[in-house]
Image (tube, rainbow, N blue to C red; front, top):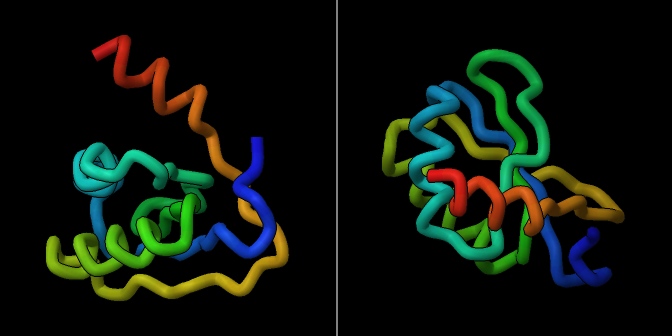
Length: 88
């Protein structure tokens, strides 16, 4: 599914371990990992305000940079997040 137009954002997190990013994102209901680009570069997506909050949390956790990505669309995976939580 997709976040409604104008309500979503994407950001690339650089220099932080994927496991740490996953742990931090557990605190955000409407932010998900969109893509594991390569080790040390992961794209997150979701509702704009929560992506901004998650970006701050990732920086505080030691990310070298979190860069907002300009995009006309935002992909999110709420079903995946729900199933991931139920599997835990």
